[in-house]
Image 1 (cartoon, rainbow, N blue to C red):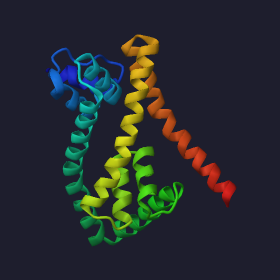
Image 2: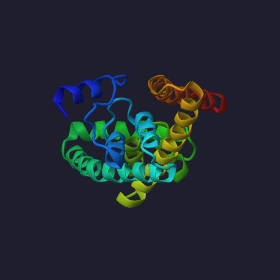
Image 3: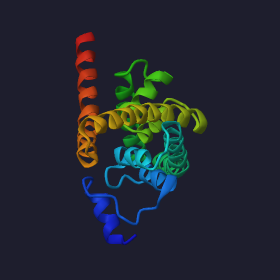
Length: 201
């Protein structure tokens, strides 16, 4: 795979997956790890085209989340250590923790596992892990919570992508439509939660 084709696919979600992308389940796993050419929707359709059943699809996405955990966790630990040692950053960390608590509070009890699962579902697993860390969860419980939310998100996207592709019958249009949903839906969820919070207050 050339660097140019990889960069084009990485920067342009509507660009086709490079023709020399790895085949089989490895290619699907890489699409889940590196969001090129449409990311999750493209990975789902590639898996379907290559005869990968949905349970294996879920398993591949779970593997990608576990890999993410082992890549992201050291970076999170280093950032936390740096923030503790520098006064200005320590103050910024306190503000970031307050923001995370307000974010999780929209989903229920700020430190509760269900609220943290919904953070991962509504934002991303890295934010879910950071919120779990702020709530006092360690590596295993924190990532279990973050991955649970992300797996729910993947299941919704997988089912929606396969259904929409059956309706539309065109993979590129399906990928584009699902990318729009992935961008718009989280912001709508946040607005609904903010409106409910104001109504409850």
